[in-house]
Length: 250
Image (cartoon, rainbow, N blue to C red; front, side, top):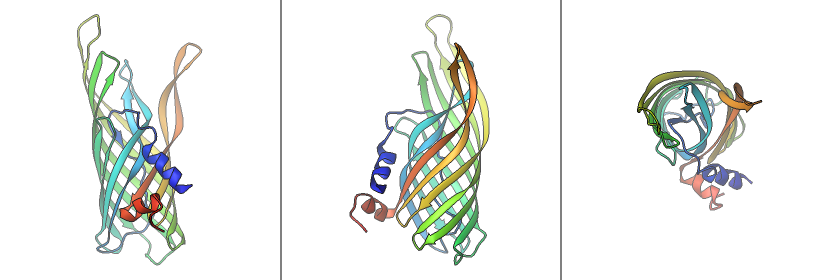
């Protein structure tokens, strides 16, 4: 069953496109890797994308699949640094640099860590035949990671996060009638999130709930709603994760 879930997470929804898209999941608990240890991961998740309508109001477009590659290194017994590279199948790419400080000793079953991150993402988008634009997102993030080791290779993780994005959209709108209009504006988004996941020896699964602003049509009117959207993701660690996914490793 885990193999099916992993394949669906990696391959599903690939027809979706995006503008500037950012990752939201963390795929790790509240402990440090340990001095000198390195962990490499790759996988897929539903990334957060920001779009806008003809009135240039910022709205969220929550359903965009991105693929990611991560590397994390332990500088000490309680401190890690790392980087996440992510991209969609369209033209959106980004990077996040992170630090992580673990408050508890590695011998404890519980883990507690603070993980701040800074990042940047850029993407191109097109709405119909008359709008063509580029979006840039400047990312600031802080996560409180809580975890519990209920077996040697299985860890339950959960905890809150705060996400902050500064988005710049630039391009032009060329309607069939009338002059071409330049698009150039900034928007900011700050929102909380809450993650729940499972980390095994080779694979991590996670879902993060984030409130997003969207628009729906009701009684011939467009109204704004805030919903909690689940951002799912899966990450494989090293070649062992890939072999396990296809049943080639225990």
